[in-house]
Image 1 (cartoon, rainbow, N blue to C red):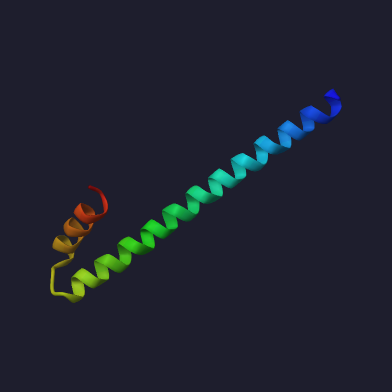
Image 2: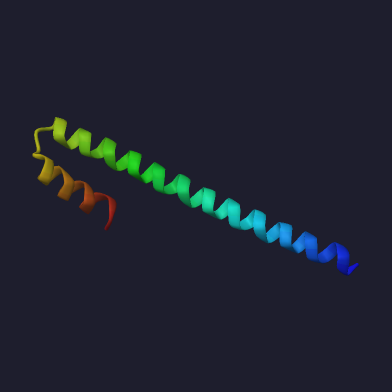
Amino acid sequence: MKTFVFPFALGFLLGRYMYLNHTKKEALDREARIQQRLLDALEDLGLSERDSSITSTSILKP
């Protein structure tokens, strides 16, 4: 029984670690894309690059 439990637990922990890292990377990439789209939209509205950066930061990070 011990020969089954240890590899199973090890595989589970490694899989969980890889899944969490992948999910975190996807979330960071998604946030970066959203922020870039927001910056582009604010600059299209006529705000300067600095003003649009400040505004997007205040919108995304309360």
